[in-house]
Amino acid sequence: MSTIEELKHIASGRVVENEPMVSYTTLGVGGPADYFVEVPTEDELSALMLYISEHELPWIVIGDGANLLVSDKGIRGIVIKLGGEFSSITVQGRRIVAGSAARISKVADAAASNNLSGLEGVGTVPGSVGGAIVMNAGTHRGYIDEVTEGIRAVTDKGEKIALSKDKCGFTYRNSRFQYDKSLIITYAVFKMKPGDGTAIASNLDAVRKHRAETQPQGKSAGCFFKNPTGLSAGKLIEGAGCKGMREGGAVVSEIHSNFIMNAHNATASDLFVLAEKVRKLVKDIQGIDLEYEVRRVGQW
Ligand SMILES: Cc1cc2nc3c(=O)[nH]c(=O)nc-3n(C[C@H](O)[C@H](O)[C@H](O)COP(=O)(O)OP(=O)(O)OC[C@H]3O[C@@H](n4cnc5c(N)ncnc54)[C@H](O)[C@@H]3O)c2cc1C
Image 1: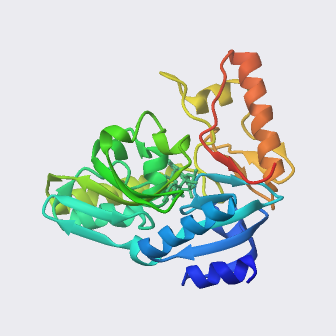
Image 2: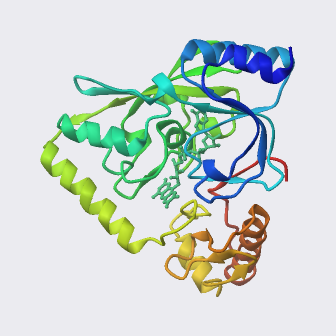
């Protein structure tokens, strides 16, 4: 059997070859993945990882692609996207068990409906539960690590494991899962506090409205660079005169300088070249090394 036939035999979700990644990233760029495999259950994910390990195939798992810069040449090997049971959200008293593919905003809404507080900070951020855990996503109102009790994962050998929060290595916009590439997060367990559901829901609405009004609209991955300790990457970029800078179809937003946008059919290369120019100017003028928040993946 060919690889694609074997993959179709293992996973009951969508399994295709040469799948363009453009529609799986909020930046709207990215060449084809050799194989794209949607996996709906933990058992299928275990079987897939066993197959990948036995055949020594390269792989990557993606969430909603809200923090990804995928290369124009695409991704060699297998792109895994979780679906099916991984979109579930289960409220158990003060705990919420959410599948990695669930939208974090939907989990925050479910928390509000059940008078549970703690996800207001991250519940306004685009993306999935899995992506939010990996990125330790959040806002000044709160980060996902603050309510995470633990996670479940499938290893690159197909084993199902559980990790408590102290094993997740959370720091600012970072977690163990950014350097330990052997794990696919399948579920997260959030320990919530009791709250007033109506107040939580209206707070989420207000912040979402505020973000929609104040953040640049269009194709982006949010902030391109992490804030250096005690500093604002956006202000550093603006101070270096980068606002409005262009490269091909990519532009540094006039509204928020840390947003590098796909304004006019940009390529991934346009976005990366522009980001590197911004980094160099910030280094030369402000003396600060900016660190990427956006994850650059694929064949560069
Ligand atoms: C308009 C806009 C505004 C934003 N504002 C914010 C903000 O205020 N705060 C903030 O923190 N972020 C923000 N972001 C960035 C983005 O929303 C977050 O980083 C988000 O958590 C990414 O989730 P995702 O599902 O899209 O992950 P992806 O971008 O798909 O993946 C991110 C990383 O996680 C890995 N990954 C994904 N799922 C899994 C899994 N199940 N197991 C293991 N690894 C996995 C991927 O391989 C990749 O390395 C913004 C983005 C946009 C587009």
